[in-house]
Length: 137
Image 1: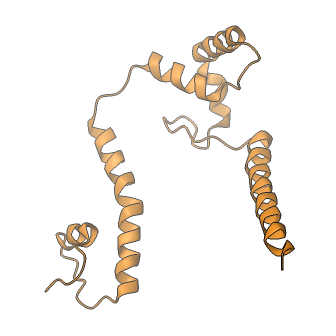
Image 2 (image 1 turned 90 degrees about the vertical axis):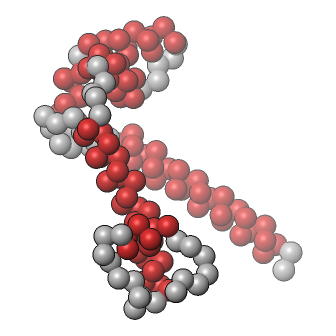
């Protein structure tokens, strides 16, 4: 007998003969979290496997736009994107999975600086808030 809030994740998993009768609340929350994390990814892979591919020219332009750093002027930006779209092989060496359609790239120095710099700024904001909170005490 179900009591409380209906959890669709648990219901979907019970359709594949998983028995949750002896699970405690923490275990149910963990199963729900794992379902919420993995199901969309698995669903996306399955749908993309059975769907029609996008034209190579459109994909090359899209990925060239992603891989091209922003230029000082829109004209320079558009020209470099067109150049990169015509020569996508130059990005192949940066891929984690070479000779595949997966576009996961190895991080560059600029990526590390941006990631850790952002976390540094978050730390500064928290530190400033902590200082202001303790000034009046």
